[in-house]
Length: 239
Image (cartoon, rainbow, N blue to C red; front, side, top):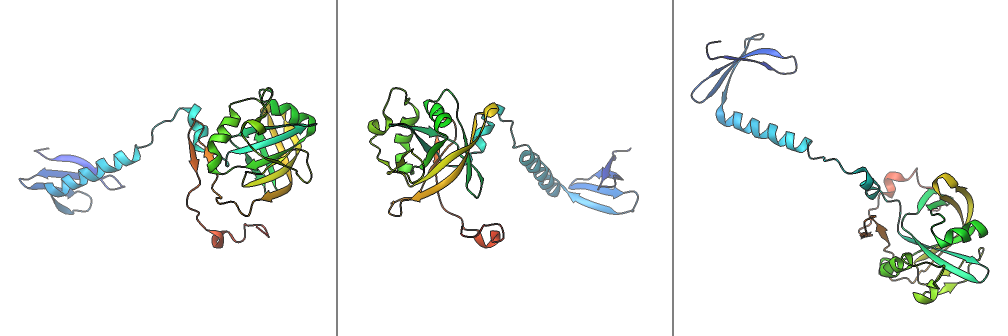
């Protein structure tokens, strides 16, 4: 086409002719008769913009599906206490699920955990919420078994009498929730719990909990963001 390049322009793909000049391109739109002079500096900027957009849109890289659970964690690491007769035990639960405001809670454990059998037998427990200061103790509790270890004694934790259930509160924790097992979903080893009493230490020097990523690393609570005014009609009375 005598040095002219035919292309398309705009969303309607109008016929466009480009004539190279010494300082740029002369652009002619056939349908409208419009003529534009685009200097090379402008063209260079446009190419950079397209390149930047292309890089930005392709930043996402596929993550192995086996690591997807690490992107979403439902709550802080907790301790779960049980009691069968005079034998008390503690286990560490990395993820505890809040199911509604009542409160209804859930977590997953199975026969591989010594506490599983106590939960199935007594249908009750206490969920104790430790502070970030207790992180190493909590991890230690999770790496030994109550089958052959008195964890309360080994880790120097103080059992306190609960009001409704026989499982103990943990005095060193920020808070404790007495729970009854109201359902067990065998297919998923999911225990569904109903909170029947809750306790909090008003003198605790920290309210910071910590969260398990799933690869041996943890994240501690940071700055609190208050968006209550935007959620006023979603928050239940008394919360």
